[in-house]
Image (cartoon, rainbow, N blue to C red):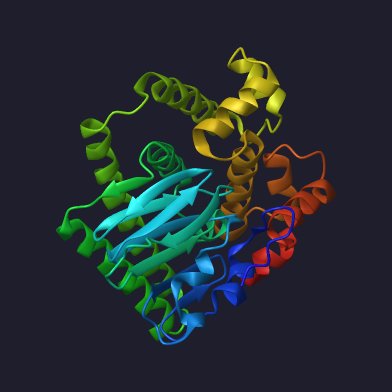
Length: 312
């Protein structure tokens, strides 16, 4: 069980594994956990009860409710899920899950947890993904057509099979990348449909989307040379404090986090695919020297640039 102290615990995907009691049939890679849980499992350790304590997770949590009813509460807002419903929780949001008291049906949920580091390791282009995540912010809960629910459940099962039944090789990452991308696009299709049918606080949402899109455009043009919050805030004619608040409100994470993700992804791509050495890469990303770049890269990845280059 998650032990609740004075503060609600904030944990990583890796820290979730022992709490969640990984069992046979679950799929795990660093930064990714996929599992099915029910209220009728013989052992409490296999059930959904371990999600009933509030906690904050540094990852995206996708919950597909196959049957029964449950309530998901995030940041003091509750959503009531039933069969064929989907819920998405964002990094840093406080979440807990409870079965409905009057629930007479067995609850069955498919759960996929992915942190941004895992998504980046799959070498997905984070720019369109970032936009989809922003749109999802207005559609955390969705009632899915049965056909779409089955398609998503099948994709999650395919990811589970690929992780559990195959030896890691170059094809594994390519297959996982394709399956995860398919999930994003299918969810994105439902987000677009849901936004059309159920507009909610559209004026404020559009305003936040506008700021975030402007920031993403600026970031794509300048991240190789500029990493300061002040630079991007001034470009958008905003104070650094207000700029930071808007980006966090719109996307669920700070502008600094987005900047670092762009820089690290570019560094990884250069280390993996280019013929540039570490010193040349550090200069191309506007670091004052190779040592500073090395410390920055290790702080965000746990590896030195040379270690990462050798690992690939």
